[in-house]
Amino acid sequence: QVQLVESGGGLVQPGGSLRLSCAASGRTFSGYAMGWFRQAPGKDREIVGAITWSSGITYYKDSVKGRFTISRDNTKNTVYLQMNNLKPEDTAVYYCAGQNSIIGPYDSWGRGTQVTVSS
Image 1 (tube, rainbow, N blue to C red):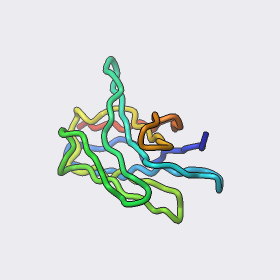
Image 2: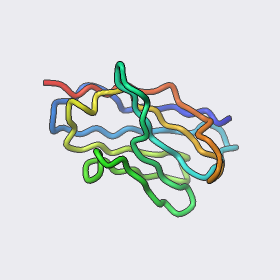
Image 3: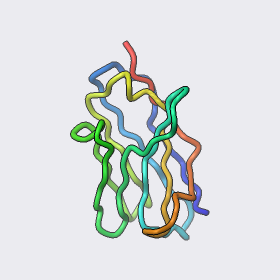
């Protein structure tokens, strides 16, 4: 599968912003969509949102709508997660993942990047 590398995580105060990046390595990248997931300690991993490569159609979890924005740069094989008005509840390890087809699973995963929202 394609190798994915997340970056941009860190410590931010409530109300602040961060932009995460997910870069796909190599020239063999292809697929239907890229998704952002997160997992907090003691919680299940959940999908944050996703974007299709071809048309840029996006999906967002209800709790982040209006605060988070997913975009992609096809020429760089990179997907971004812009996070605004961050809340302590957003604290988690954030992962990007690739979906090869509309009926397939997310089967390519990055190692994750820590996002901590705290005063």
